Length: 74
Image (cartoon, rainbow, N blue to C red; front, side, top):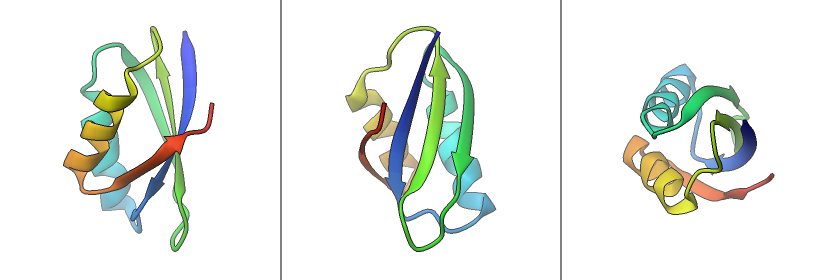
């Protein structure tokens, strides 16, 4: 099991959390997602997965949700 924290910009509400959770949750191997929503600053998205995720796939999922990935915080 791998846990990785990602810094995501642009999230402001519960709908944002839902969108990111849905897109990232669709990635192969993801078992759990929690979001620490911080309005006006980067939010932390914590992803648990069976194996480490490909950063490009995570970035694409977050982009698809309409937000911007800063970097993993591992």
